[in-house]
Length: 444
Ligand SMILES: *[C@@H]1O[C@H](CO)[C@@H](O)[C@H](O)[C@H]1NC(C)=O
Image 1 (cartoon, rainbow, N blue to C red):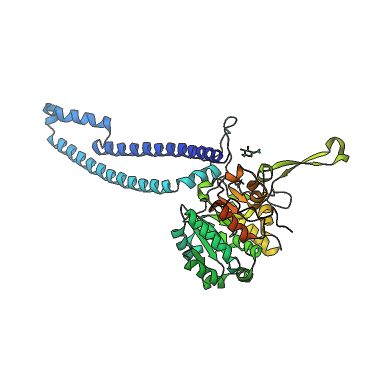
Image 2: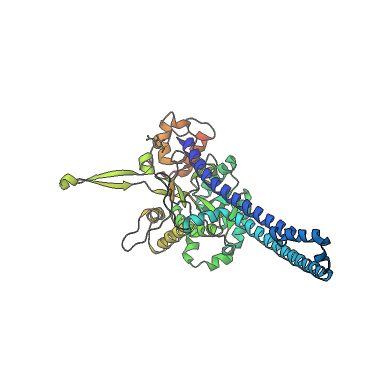
């Protein structure tokens, strides 16, 4: 179920894009050949095919008495041909210049091809709908044009750290130092190069540096500029939830710089490289708090109201929330709008960031409210596993026990550090009973 699903999805997308770019490059080649042939003919036949043939005829007919009498006229003709030739070569040089310009334009257009294709899909001409079963709406929005000016020093770090313009980012202050150590130790063990710790205090910045962990520490200037004074207080003193809210503010800069971010809490153990298991077709691709197909991927929950008689059953759409501690977000306008909306609400309301994140992602437009239109994808809950799935189901099922998840997020349990270590013992060190001592839930 897990491997097959992903591969077929990827192949379908690649096939579609490949077909379009093949057509495009064929068109480009045809146009270039046309222009080139045009130049060749302009050079050798400055007056065109059909005009030039009588001219050849004229020189052959030189012995004709009528023509030879007018040698003056013939030298005039030669001059005319000369000047025509000069004009033609000038024209040729001009054409060459135009070709150079066109080639340059083509090259830079080629570099933006990916975005442009998507832009055309968004803003392009109206189209007729294709035949039944062939139409497909857009879910992969175009990425924004990177803007280095929003944070040049972060831009420099990202150039070094990111791979294919994407990276894992976590926020950490000294309250979560021990978990952070488990976090980066496992990332290193798996061999993931593109990750970054956004240090919220000096101690964490030093801790990362001494462990050669890529780290970003905001410079004092930036902190001074920070309009929200509350930010620094939360950054230094805040617990898990408070710090969680900051990430929506911080993430914006990464997206503006043109990077896709896999946002990660620190209470996560990495067992495989997550970048090999992403679809990248949606604005937000997130792990779920759900624990089976229904709760993770959505279901029709029937609400029963017997006194309504014939219409006693009301159907509702349900889905367990996305986990705002582990999601992949692409640098698009809807993604940035999402971050702004969540950060804005967290600044105004005393709310839980995960609830706000989900409300903004899922509630539709309605009177007095304009919904966000971001595309979403739920990650496979066996690959991107929450700790309820692990401790309630997987560890008790002989088949599921053999599965190797990509990550495990200890989001459902307060005793995070010991459970993280047990996960490492079970999946990495092969201790088959490492998960056994823990209760399913938190025990209170
Ligand atoms: C759950 O969903 C996956 C894929 O979406 C499918 O392969 C699997 O059979 C489903 N499991 C159940 C119990 O319905």
